[in-house]
Length: 362
Image 1 (cartoon, one colour):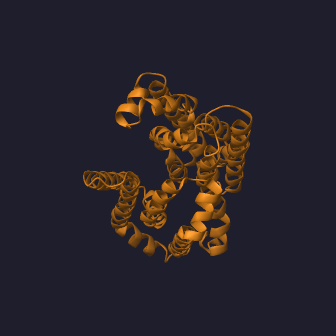
Image 2 (cartoon, rainbow, N blue to C red):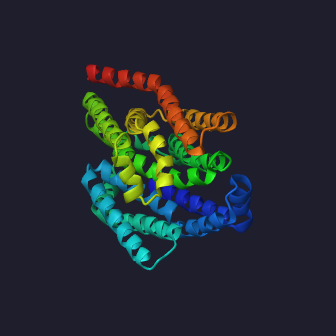
Image 3 (tube, one colour):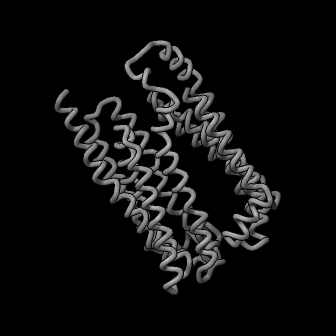
């Protein structure tokens, strides 16, 4: 049932992406609404065509990763990640040696990486899927409640969270295109995001770990919270070490290849966003606790608050201040993330108390 659900979902999302790439629709969104220059819009269009396998590959990959997490085989997810990174590195190296356009090289590397990881993860789940099919022949107390309506009701807040979380980036691009220093801001934004993501990514999968470990024993909640605090503090200190030292200039200029002029644009946003890895760990901890308790609606509402705060902050800073677009975006991301986390705190606290009460009763 879950396999059929994710298949339909992946086909629908890919179809939507194809629709958006049709010239009339694409021109309306990218040129008229966002206002990208014709040259950049043309490069983006081809890159998005190359990225067409991306959503379906991601969808199925996450589905099979869920199987591995359910079976406690999280180490295999790491193996899949290594396959993806290797495929990306090989693809990017080959296309770079052929002097391929940078946007096309990046898009092809990303697509090849996720497709390769999907194949690897699927092969690693063969035995687990066979075991789950055997188990599925046995009735249990929860099976009667699992239908497509239940799946949609449980899943749509999480899907909405992802859609809004990813959809905010085109909105940020739209506002930065109308800000001060728009070209410089648009040029450094992906590089700044990449550095932040290196530290944030460590905590992004903590939600799945929390769900899996709480299913084994809800008493693990205290250890999971303690680990989250430690991991968040470690990641924040690591990014601060880079952002507030000469390492940031080395990263942006020598490693990422930005000019000295663009490097200067990138330094302050990274300093502003230095606590983002800790915020990412906090929010994934809260997501994990809430999803374990079946409380997914607050997650989507928190995302709406976060996105609305980001857009409102951008509108105010870009229209009423002289800040460059990249600085306004950094402040907006930080304020929005804080607001989303604050909204989730009381729901997480109540769910935390329910889990603790259950431990005492047992």
